[in-house]
Amino acid sequence: MSVAIVVNPMSGGATARQGRRRAELASEVLSAAAEEGDVFVTDRRGHGRELAAAAVRRGARLVIAWGGDGTVNEVASALVGTSVALGIVPSGSGNGLARELGVDRKPQRAILDALRATSRTIDAGEIAGHLFFNITGVGFDAHLAACFDRDATGRRGLSTYAKLTLREMWRYPSATYRIDGREVRRALLVTVANSGQFGNGARVAPGARLDDGRLDVVVFEERSRLGAVATIPSLFLNRFDRARGVSMWQTEGTVIECDHPMTFHVDGEPQAGGTRLVVKVHPGALRVAVK
Image 1: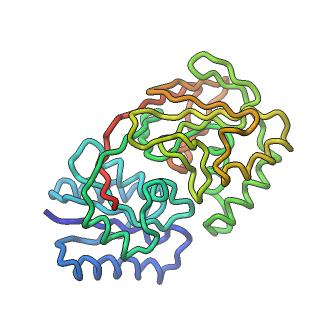
Image 2 (image 1 turned 135 degrees about the vertical axis):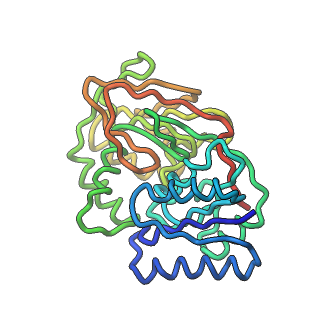
């Protein structure tokens, strides 16, 4: 059975030359490891899902996603419910799932580890019919994902996220939501986490586990905007669960409602939603090949 490597040549703000080199390196590693496989390069949003689904139909045993959280989401979505395992070569702006799984940041090492790993299962989440594997949410994180998606500079990475966060934090209005009928006022953040972090080491749900059959709901109700800004460092110090205004609980499913249509994100990719979002977990839905 063969291996497929799906490469996003532009993830993380890579140049065209760097993108071509990714595909070349992937082929070189497969050849050196004496592995039968193919390398595919995405050219549009959603292409990764199509390529991964085709690899499954051809009988691949492993599909490796080389890209950021969006590419990983596309590839993983095509593998859910199959026996085909997901490998990851992280090259995005946040790499939340890869970081949570402990994937090596060196591409050659990440590919070799995936080829040699014994696969295990992790959970998948679903919101409004969209699968996620790392984190979903409404509120400021979804707003930030939308800003990042349309950022005119085209620059990716932690510095762009930091710039947008500081700029948008002062502009973004908090909102009132109903979560399973419970009213939450002045909420900046309603996050549902399968893993513990957004990416770049920002841990929003320190207690989340990828294979516990549950999702972690994180709500941040602001007391003041200055106080909200002051909580940002706690994300990187693994103390967000102790911040004032933060509440967390585990669930197998939840319903988020609002009086106006909500923007939400799935693994950092923004989506337009309605006034009611149904979230649920699919335990053990995805096989991953990590060392």
